[in-house]
Image (cartoon, rainbow, N blue to C red; front, side):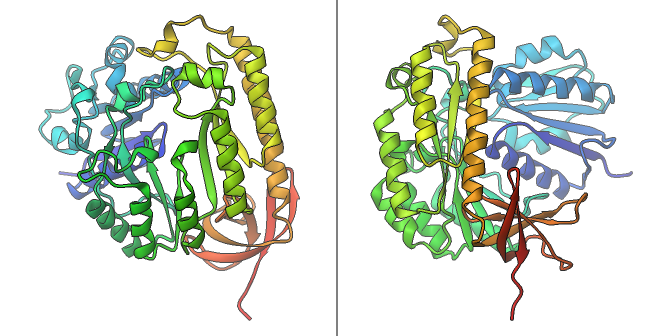
Length: 437
């Protein structure tokens, strides 16, 4: 009997990407053949996202598209599957398997016990609020990636007024250091040169462990294991203290790139969002990072059009982002999410939300261009990510999150190289490879 073919696609965050990769590795170990999502497969897995209304819509669109291929089995899992199972059942007419967060790690075993093709929709859900254990989702190769994502934390316990994550993933749960060490060692054994530390709310890592631990303990481990390059994903302003910055300044592997979860620079909006920091905390941490790491890329998440965002509150956010030495923004137009408090409040007109988001994206592009321009004339260490099929140029990522294209006839995929940055076209940097004398 020939091997069954399985294809998967991931929407949303880095945590979701790791979980999909781990599930595919488990399927492969059971004899399944992994194929591209665009190819014909027996089983399709869609790891959905629900953080915005757009993400939920895209999840449904993908599921609809797969039903036209008439596979033996279609699996919907992830955040949207957890909170939107009834909507999926209503809108997707073909039989499918809907798997919530608690059962997600066991999908390969669940599939093995099914009689295929699936005749009717099955739903495996539980109450995520009672989850207490962070699933390890072990992984050897992060297929298709030159940077390895290290998933150390899941869930969030804060219930910000706009955010659906606690309803979709449950409370904050941390992976213990021994399991983190095992995963890092697996990645290093495969030759990965950069590890990106990620979680649903990374700054909460360690608080639920017994005894509690700090993010600094995790950073000590990475330095101890001699990880060539490591990078932090999103943190809140109050989650970065001077002790951590002092350690990172001395750490050989740390990449000077900080991504801050800001959302708004208006204290009134932050209060109504239920955030735990204020505008002044954000200004302080950006200034402190600048003193420790003058070359650092500092990016932010920002929400446009939150229900409590008046015109003056938006301008307050815009002006501060304009003034501070930031490298880029991730802009999220606000969309009401089911079960959140903010969804019940009077909403801003969609055209106004879109206008504000566009203004922020335009500013972000200008910020990125200015930050990239400052790299011209510098020699940067790049991790080579891919070869562009159209130009045959290599694409590399610097420690401070700058993408540079350069030419070489060597096979450099996944390697660390030194490149001199020479010119910029629009927001694309080009340089020349430094060869050994």
